[in-house]
Length: 475
Ligand code: UDP
Figure 1 (cartoon, protein in one colour):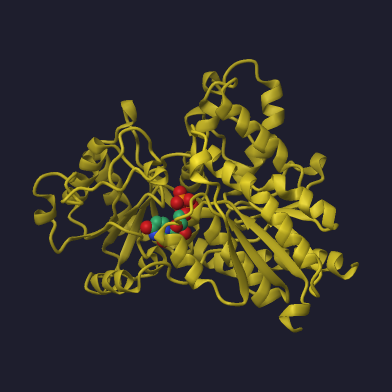
Figure 2 (cartoon, rainbow, N blue to C red):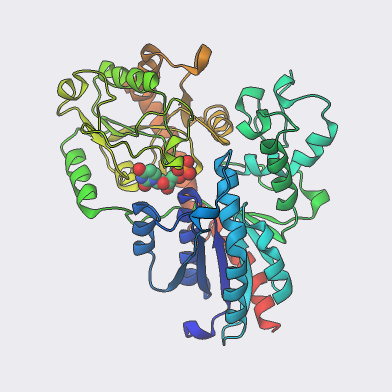
């Protein structure tokens, strides 16, 4: 079918790199494998999107219409307490433009089949309603968080005190129990705070879509969709959807791969806390000393420390004007680790690193994309969750999936160099490491099968696109 006549799916993504990456892959698959055409709208938060956004946009194939919607004017920006509020503001600002694009698509030859939004974009569902097509949410985190999210109104109604005072973990159907210290930060705030109230209202909104796609697969989270009967909300596991094309500067990419080419198989520790994660100054020093202690070669996608928040890089506090960009590292560290460590200051070519045979383990903040990328490359993880739902992810990965070992964080939220080094050694150990790698390899094979032609995720996506197509053909 010529692309101009194919049923059209409109996707709206909020300004988070961790959402945009799987959205781009979903759009790519809809076009390449499901006979649809796709417009991916990106609600920018600032007029000057980061290098990574530009690089991702450049790697999106021409078959997808990728449109950056104008950011809210900087001079009328309210002050935000959280990243979530900033992102929500950008999405609300973009909705009139979504209307414009949707109306012009509806007037074109290609019938509109569906609107797909992320968890922040649900307020745009009125657009779908008016145009008579379904609004689906593409949830870019695990089922376990989605389940918590969908159960939140019910949990909230039953609760008489604060979540943080609970003595019992939260038990969701088929998921590992969630202990208080593993809950997302928004649930640990006072229930009367705007942070929690906003989180709860987002959870209530989530249940108002026509269906949900989750970036997970049944073998990893067998409970997907469990406990949803009363909501009559179809939930489909369609993952793992990861963006396999390199994002970023080709030169950095080649330099990193060349460096890895010269290291023994399975010997390298890759350290990254995602696009936003930051450690304190003291913790950065401790991690540096731990890496030095283990004597394993390492690639560290390093960010400037931030003593105030664990997601400092999201807030743009990273652009230090220092003469020495690594001045925060322990004295002599760079000289002592010459030839052993590769420090990457800008965007790391993560998928290329994880797919390299030299990499033996991934120290990660357990962001969901990083987790899926690690699994798809059969790389065991050292889990060091920082914010959002990452502590829940880490618990699931260690306790249920057995593909990660958590760093134990001591009093004051601090991990000692001895603890960090001991977890790295455990995962890199000849016997224990080999056992873990074999196990992760099995999970990788099941993940690859899920998205292969006969797999559960490919099947689920085909089913959903059939439903969408039927809406388009009714027009
Ligand atoms: N990423 C990357 N290079 C970096 C940092 C992140 O390629 O230096 C990619 C990573 O491969 C993943 C995404 O950005 O696809 C980060 O998403 P994740 O959910 O892991 O964490 P977030 O950044 O949203 O906290």
